[in-house]
Length: 257
Image 1 (tube, rainbow, N blue to C red):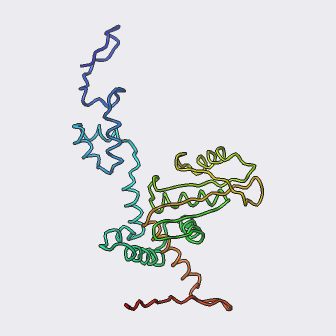
Image 2: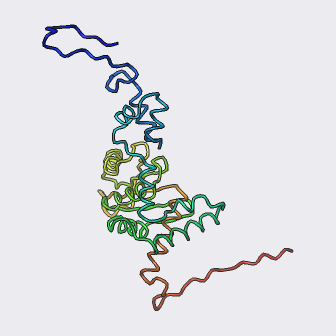
Image 3: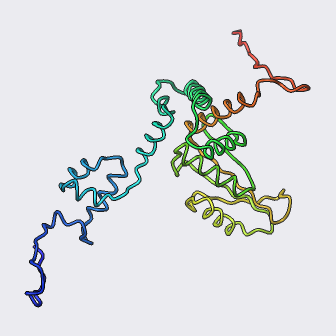
C-alpha cells in the first residue's frame, strides 16, 4: 500500500489504494520495458498482459504505440494482395531456391502495383544500379542521395537485418578516412561498427569519396534480381539493339574417359 502524509485533510480528496502489481507509472518497475519488448517481438496485447500477469488495459498503457515489424510486413502484404513471404516456405535449396525467388519476385513486380510511386521508383533505381549475386546485393556510388535510397530500400522494402548490412568508404588521399566513415555512418543511419574505410588511390580528385553498400541476404538478392527482370521486361530489354549480340548460354558436355 502506498500512503501519503495527511496535510489539511479537509481540503484533500479521499485516499485511494493502488495495488503495486497494477501501477503503470512506477519508475522502478521493469515490466513496462518488458511489455514493450514483448510487443515488438510480435505478441498481442492480451498475450503481453497474460505474460506479465496484469490487465489488458495496463498492458496497453505500457505498450503504447509500439512499432511492430511483423505487423508492418503484414500490412504491406495486405495492400499488395500477396507478398514475397509466400515464396519463403517453398521446399527448395541452393540455386533452385534462388531461381524460384527471382521468378516469384519478377511476377510480383510485373503484376502488382507498389503501395506508393516513390517506393516503386526507389526499388527501380536500386534494381538498375545494383550488382547482384545469388547471395548479396552491392551498390557502389559517390552520390549520398543514392546511398540513402539504397539503405532505405534494403531496410524498408526488403527487411534486411542490420547485421547483414555493410558499408565500405573509399576516400581519396586528401580525405581523413576515419572522419569520412563517421560522417557516412550518421548519414546512412547505420551502426559505426558496420562501416569500414579504405584508401582510394585512383580517385578522380584528392577529395573524392565513394561508398559501397552491401547486403548479404539471399532473399533480398533474389528479390532485386526479380525487380531487374521485371524492369527489363517493361523497358523492352528483350529486344537486342542493333550492333549488339545476345550471349547465348553455353552447354558443356562432360564425357567420361
